[in-house]
Length: 335
Image (cartoon, rainbow, N blue to C red; front, side, top):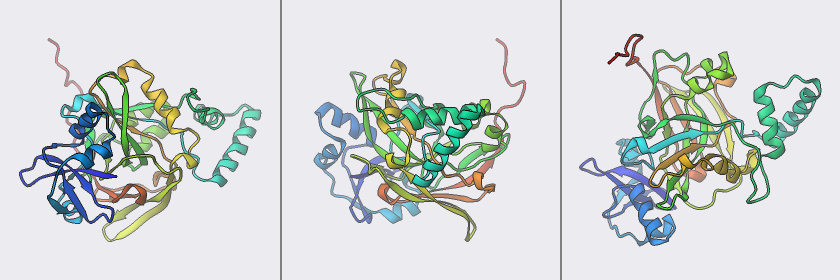
């Protein structure tokens, strides 16, 4: 099922179901968002799709029109943004079967020479142990924190890069969307397209700057896809500048293109008790192998990032905007 959050005529958040053709949205009555819908599903012991099917709603809206009018929101948020944790894992994707073979040979050679970097060593651990038997823990992935729910931009909204940043570039990724139930059980609601958006120049200076490079906004949506994800998910990532596409590359994700299983990545995130606080929302990025920055492209203000994964519905588009920093040296006051 394809779910979205949208603004009604009064500007209030609502939940809706996109039809199979992607033409119309059925607005659910009495539901002010997917958080409420999912909470009801957990309480009733139903799946999210079953809960949506059981919820009345006769109003139909034109989906393309909602997107044009910027009335489509990110598909999941918490009423209190501080109770939404936005995180991610890196070094999880292989790129393609050919890249897997080539990378594995390079890893073997560098391991024998004793010249593996920390990043390549962690990638090797994933290749060797990131897909354990079901129910067993596998290799621990790289993990990072991006922010709380306040950093998530809606589809079509600007991705703000602070003026102290050295770069602002896209990272097309699959996002897992979760709600922690009253008993502390994480419930996966589904998956969405994400633009993880990072400062790659800062990260390249030293890998210990990775944490700094990730403290940026991101975008997720437009849709939440419920149910199982296909193993092989394919699409495109592109950068538009005015009427021109200045960069485009295939984007492959799903477990067929990863060196970690989704179950393993979820385990290593939710094994921490602090990540299982009842009522919290988690938005977790699963990594990528496709970056315009890696091809020497530098995004400019006004450029539009476009990420397309047909299996997950409509594309995600967001322009880049540079904004002044809101804090200066000496801004801390002693009490």
